[in-house]
Length: 105
Image (tube, rainbow, N blue to C red; front, side):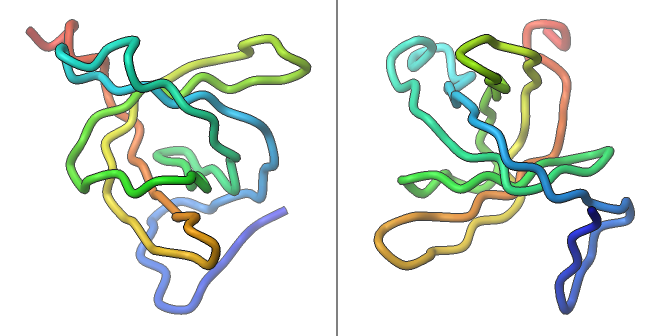
Protein backbone atom coordinates (compact mmCIF):
# COMPACT_ATOMS: atom_id res chain seq x y z
CA UNK A 1 0.00 0.00 0.00
CA UNK A 2 1.38 3.40 -0.94
CA UNK A 3 1.57 6.16 1.67
CA UNK A 4 1.35 9.80 0.60
CA UNK A 5 1.43 13.14 2.34
CA UNK A 6 0.76 16.75 1.39
CA UNK A 7 3.97 18.50 0.41
CA UNK A 8 5.70 15.17 -0.25
CA UNK A 9 9.29 15.62 -1.45
CA UNK A 10 10.37 12.00 -1.86
CA UNK A 11 11.28 10.89 -5.35
CA UNK A 12 10.34 7.24 -4.76
CA UNK A 13 7.00 5.68 -3.88
CA UNK A 14 6.68 4.78 -0.22
CA UNK A 15 4.85 1.79 1.16
CA UNK A 16 3.09 1.44 4.50
CA UNK A 17 4.96 -1.12 6.58
CA UNK A 18 4.45 -2.07 10.21
CA UNK A 19 7.27 -3.98 11.82
CA UNK A 20 9.51 -3.72 14.83
CA UNK A 21 13.04 -2.37 14.62
CA UNK A 22 16.04 -1.86 16.86
CA UNK A 23 17.98 1.34 16.45
CA UNK A 24 21.63 1.75 17.43
CA UNK A 25 24.00 4.69 16.96
CA UNK A 26 26.89 4.49 14.52
CA UNK A 27 28.95 7.03 16.46
CA UNK A 28 32.12 5.19 17.62
CA UNK A 29 31.71 6.41 21.21
CA UNK A 30 28.11 5.19 21.44
CA UNK A 31 28.08 1.85 19.60
CA UNK A 32 26.28 -0.74 21.71
CA UNK A 33 25.40 1.75 24.46
CA UNK A 34 22.16 3.33 23.32
CA UNK A 35 20.09 0.66 21.56
CA UNK A 36 16.33 1.23 21.58
CA UNK A 37 13.16 -0.05 19.91
CA UNK A 38 11.23 1.63 17.11
CA UNK A 39 8.26 0.95 14.86
CA UNK A 40 8.73 1.11 11.08
CA UNK A 41 5.89 3.21 9.64
CA UNK A 42 6.74 3.23 5.95
CA UNK A 43 9.57 2.51 3.57
CA UNK A 44 10.72 3.45 0.07
CA UNK A 45 13.62 2.50 -2.14
CA UNK A 46 15.80 5.16 -0.52
CA UNK A 47 14.56 5.55 3.04
CA UNK A 48 12.42 4.68 6.02
CA UNK A 49 10.07 6.45 8.46
CA UNK A 50 10.32 5.36 12.10
CA UNK A 51 8.27 6.11 15.19
CA UNK A 52 10.62 6.40 18.17
CA UNK A 53 10.44 7.53 21.79
CA UNK A 54 13.21 10.13 21.54
CA UNK A 55 14.33 12.83 19.10
CA UNK A 56 17.26 11.96 16.81
CA UNK A 57 19.47 14.79 15.53
CA UNK A 58 19.32 15.56 11.82
CA UNK A 59 22.46 14.31 10.09
CA UNK A 60 23.16 11.62 12.71
CA UNK A 61 23.94 8.04 11.63
CA UNK A 62 22.10 4.97 12.96
CA UNK A 63 21.83 1.27 12.15
CA UNK A 64 18.31 -0.13 11.84
CA UNK A 65 17.74 -3.83 12.52
CA UNK A 66 14.37 -4.97 11.17
CA UNK A 67 12.73 -7.53 13.50
CA UNK A 68 10.13 -10.19 12.70
CA UNK A 69 9.06 -12.69 15.36
CA UNK A 70 12.13 -11.84 17.46
CA UNK A 71 14.55 -12.46 14.59
CA UNK A 72 16.60 -9.88 12.71
CA UNK A 73 15.49 -10.11 9.08
CA UNK A 74 17.65 -7.29 7.75
CA UNK A 75 19.66 -4.27 8.73
CA UNK A 76 20.82 -1.07 7.12
CA UNK A 77 22.41 2.22 8.19
CA UNK A 78 20.47 5.46 7.84
CA UNK A 79 21.19 9.16 8.06
CA UNK A 80 18.45 11.16 9.80
CA UNK A 81 16.95 13.67 7.36
CA UNK A 82 13.64 14.57 9.05
CA UNK A 83 12.17 14.68 12.54
CA UNK A 84 8.74 15.64 13.85
CA UNK A 85 7.42 15.63 17.40
CA UNK A 86 4.22 13.70 18.02
CA UNK A 87 1.89 13.45 20.99
CA UNK A 88 2.88 11.56 24.15
CA UNK A 89 6.60 12.15 23.64
CA UNK A 90 6.93 10.09 20.46
CA UNK A 91 8.74 11.30 17.34
CA UNK A 92 8.63 10.54 13.63
CA UNK A 93 12.10 10.17 12.14
CA UNK A 94 12.79 9.99 8.42
CA UNK A 95 16.04 8.29 7.51
CA UNK A 96 17.86 8.01 4.20
CA UNK A 97 19.51 4.65 3.55
CA UNK A 98 23.29 5.04 3.41
CA UNK A 99 26.52 3.03 3.47
CA UNK A 100 28.17 1.71 6.64
CA UNK A 101 30.75 4.34 7.74
CA UNK A 102 33.54 1.76 8.11
CA UNK A 103 33.28 1.00 4.38
CA UNK A 104 33.90 4.66 3.55
CA UNK A 105 36.93 4.98 5.85
